[in-house]
Structure formats: C-alpha cells, structure tokens
Length: 195
Image 1 (cartoon, helix red, strand yellow):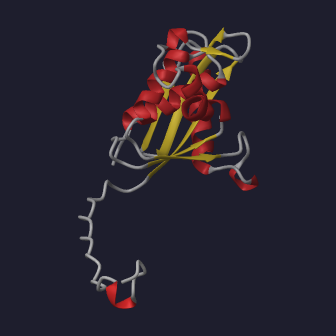
Image 2 (cartoon, helix red, strand yellow):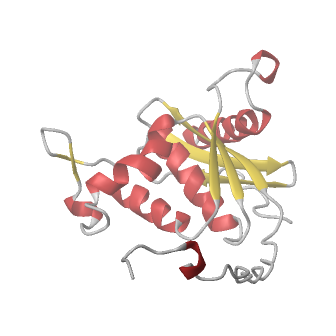
Image 3 (cartoon, one colour):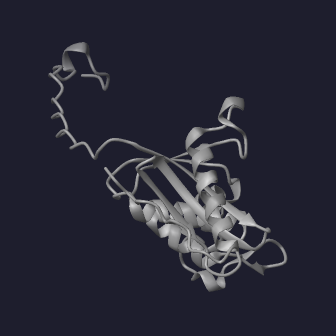
C-alpha cells in the first residue's frame, strides 16, 4: 500500500446545503429629498438656516446671537434631522462643504472617534478649539442610525444656470429670515414636517 490517494479514495460529491432566503425587510418609507442652506448678513452677523422639501413642507431655523453662513447651514441640517422621522431615508441637497465635512469627515478626528466631549475638540497644528463644536456634535448625533445621502449643489446659482431648486428655495427662506431678524422681527418658521 502507498501513501498516495487513488481516485476511488476521494469522498463522494454531495449537494451543497441550501442557504435559506433572508426575510424581506419592511420598507422604511419613501426617500425624502430636502434642500438646506444658511444665510448671514453681515457675515458674521444675524444668521438663519432653512430646509425645503415642498411649498407645504419646510422649516426655518434662526441662529441665536451672532452666526455665519456655515452656522446657518448647520442649523438648517439640524432642524431638518429633527423634523423628518428617523426611519425615512433622507437626501440632503446642501451647498456648504464645510457643514457636510464637519458632520461626515472631520468629526471623527476632533472627537477622537467619540471619546472626547465637544469642549475638548481641537483642530490643526495650532490645536485651536473647534468652532461650533456643540452644534456639530448635536447635529452629528441626529445622523446616527439614519440613512442619509449628500448631494452638493452649486451655491447661489439660479435654477436656470444649473442650481438645485430645493437648495435655491432653502437659500431664499434663510435670506428672508435674516432680513426679518435684522429689522427686529421674528421670521416665519414655516409649517415644518408634513407628510
């Protein structure tokens, strides 16, 4: 007898086990597409953000104290995330790359992957405190467990020249809110979330 296997020593080929089909996942709802934008006058100065889904579904978020365009957009995104039910998938049409990158890229380094409170966040070689850290942290927490897609819109470009209608409407609402605030008034906050 030799140590080599002969063909007749191989095990018989058996049918592979069938893997059961996964249970269907219940739909979470239709995709919500919303434009966001911030406005400020002067910059920095009176600021507000707005989100817009439709003429009957939008919101305005005034910024307390002094703000910037970017703070306005972060406030708009926070207000949108508070308004839209978390089980609804969401596409955010934004024009502030700063706001998106704060919420999706930079926050991991600043917070040391969530181990540092916003008051301890530092940036760059100078280790300066991160501006707007509390707003960024609060808004980022609202993203947890949600399905969110980000679509970059051209800022301050008319729809006819390639701008996005939803971002354009959010810009219009935020700008009108800032002008009302500059005159000492309270802006119309809009109807909020409506199915």
